[in-house]
View 1 (tube, rainbow, N blue to C red):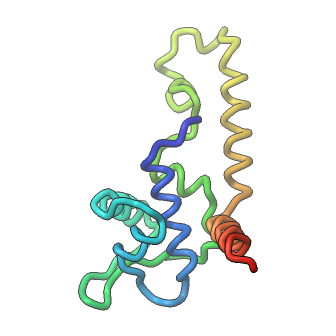
View 2 (cartoon, rainbow, N blue to C red; view 1 turned 60 degrees about the vertical axis):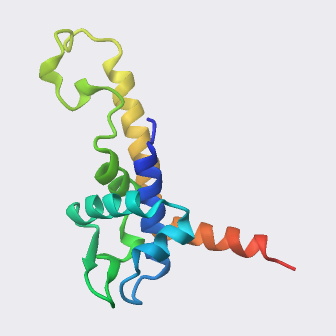
Length: 144
């Protein structure tokens, strides 16, 4: 599995929103600045995350973006699939009808294991976990 910049930046945006969960909307400029994401690209990602039902967006001077659910209930699997699509390492796992060798393929079970392992790892990590890791890393950098 290879995560694109879209997936990386999108998860970073969710982590930033997790830092502000329950505080009201966070403006795009704040998310972009704190996570080093170009704001025009961030706006595209936020649209994808909104369409996937992970965030809500409010317009206006008091507007911004916020997580719809508690970050403890939002897994990395959900975030990555919303941004990147399927976690399948090969297309035939999503559409077996497209493979003429499906019945005798010796690789398909391996790809199934890869997908299952990837999903298991990503399901075990929440956006709240990532936010906490980021907080811990920031406090370690500024320790006196």
